[in-house]
Length: 407
Image (cartoon, rainbow, N blue to C red; front, side, top):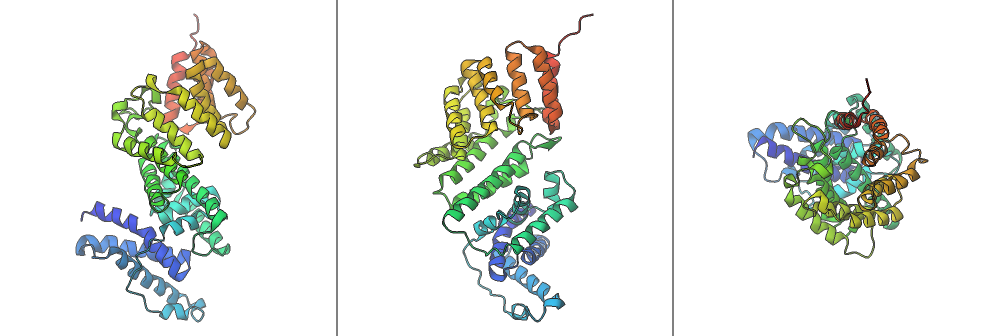
């Protein structure tokens, strides 16, 4: 097995091993440290000695021993934990996969969205603290402190290692899906930095969504989220030029879209829409499938896209949904109708200086011939985003409509 294949295997097994240890010993932080040591040992030994017949069992055994060593070295609690420290490590590792339980634990409601995201990537995604810090452009020490505080809050909340029941389970599942959605969005369109997207984060979100779907395939919103990710990720190769410049959807080379991901995503959309109710992820996936099914931008069924956004706006009101509906409305009724819809967002504090609202308005103003207004809004939009790729694109659009100064 190649070093790369071993790395992929360890990333897949790490959350399973951590879940097993947390269920067995009940100490999230100590168990995670022990799993990281076991993974490090495997990364050193397996390329030389070969991957064991039962790699998951090997990791569980080594991690359990490391955890017990940690307990034994804690002199302040030696007597209280002596029973744990002397128990025999079981050689039989249960076949059950508790990764979903671990994911629910990482998305505990006592944590902020930022902490839920960081802890999920660390414990379930298997990313190092340094990798997560780089992804979100913060110092490693800052991210380490955030993850540590998240673990302490979970401990203080007295959470048991089990799936919640009933309505609480559905509420927590919504949080889990939202966290995965945030991770994917940050990977697909980075909020800051020189790169438009971070494919590693997007792929990790898809991997985790596949894992959740494998265990909850009957949930239409789980299916919808996975479909949305696949259909959106299918466009990644066409979203930038060779120089890294942004290419808008209507100018993308659709022959470069990943047809296998589109086919898989489209089938998942059909499955998700077969249920009795509609959720936000199902509707967003249906919109993505409509775009994916058009051979050219001109052949897009904009009436269908607009109708889906109308439904989405009703069941999950959000200014971004209204903004996207305005884009579809412009294709149906023209830019002036879309500008009228955008005006309803002017009083929303969340959108007042958002670069997306500014850039869409700039484009619509350009469409109706108001080049001075378009220029001003493109410039403001460029200043409002921390993404270098988006800044370059918006500045180039501003340069194209910049009013000429008469001599």
